[in-house]
Figure 1 (cartoon, rainbow, N blue to C red):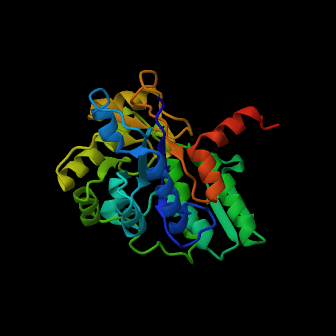
Figure 2 (cartoon, protein in one colour; figure 1 turned 120 degrees about the vertical axis):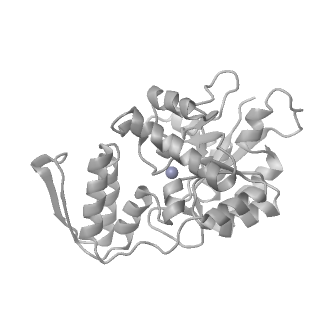
Figure 3 (cartoon, protein in one colour; figure 1 turned 135 degrees about the vertical axis):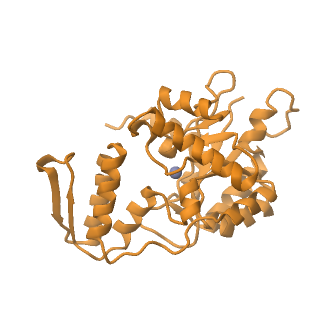
Length: 311
Ligand SMILES: [Zn+2]
């Protein structure tokens, strides 16, 4: 039977324009539904015991979190504990060490919080070697930010970091959020509460766009070693940032010592068919209401999408 593995990021009552934080009320409703209709276990337990485990009355499912935000322990963990719902948290070790969000969230944060209407970025990857733009509204700036993100996210990492620096310089009225990430103490607390801790790399790059194998391998090894150093165990699982990987990335993840690799493709895992280094997950997007979330959980939204082509 296929296995749905659900993915969450943030759970917080604080609203944002980019829709990455799920409201705690919707999160609780989701977890209540999941624990009533599925036998939830961690990804790691499921795959470690796949053959020797007795099948229960309810179908199996897993709950996962990416990125390691502070709200995971503040809002998500108490609800998970209330419903006795096992889960795995995949953390970005540099973000935990420095207590700053991943570059993806820094990018979103600056576009969302700034009041500045002028943006200038120089990069050899742009036509005319630069972008200079004046926004007429917050909405226009946010829409532009979303479109630009899609254009730049797979640029070589050094170019991407330079663009990110220039965005922060242009939007100088914005400060980084204060202590947004889990601390190592929080990570160990989650571990002691029975949750699983895995790696979501060291710096959250688009792995297939890194310059060479060495750079990819160090994202895997250094994050895994850091987790071992701080929690006592090398992680079993790697969650690829933004679900981005290729064959080379998979080979290097294995080489670094990971047993499972997680991607995001809105599909269920098919045992004995899917590669365990490319396990699909279903993102329960935070910007949805209960109806969409319910349809995603039950795979209906994906089926509707397959039936109705884009145009
Ligand atoms: Zn991520």
